Length: 158
Image (tube, rainbow, N blue to C red; front, side):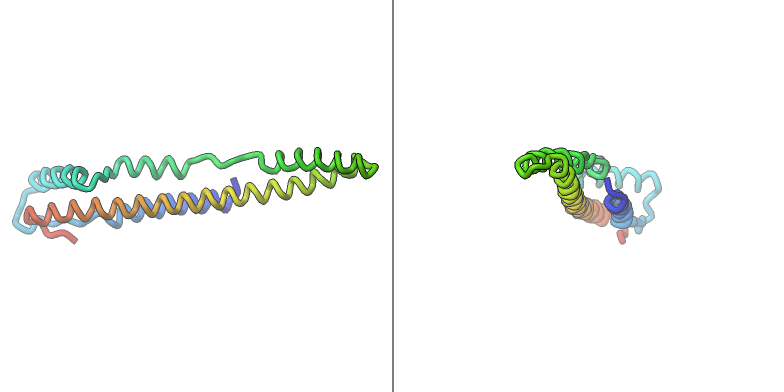
């Protein structure tokens, strides 16, 4: 995998983690609720939010980790070089110099294989970014539901 793509994927994972932390509501016991009461209310509201929205933050976090660690296709340049060499040898044999044709075909095939690999990596990075945005939106919906529930129980939520 290209270092640039690897770096972009790392940034996306870090962005998701920061976004998830930033989206979590801050809850204050506005009516003198005890710490244990707040913990109970929070757990109940999180369960309600999960059931209501269908969003499970634990599953989303696992999906984000799985997607960011997805292996990238390998060997595109080698496949391109082999195919190019074979084609070049065939064309070169007709022209009278199979060795020269194979060498030219290998170089051309390597370049084409590298281009295919780069495009595949760019597509994978774009797909990962789209998936991360969907996860972020789902977390926002879940956190809004938790906030609504806690507000209904007499907490101030920011």
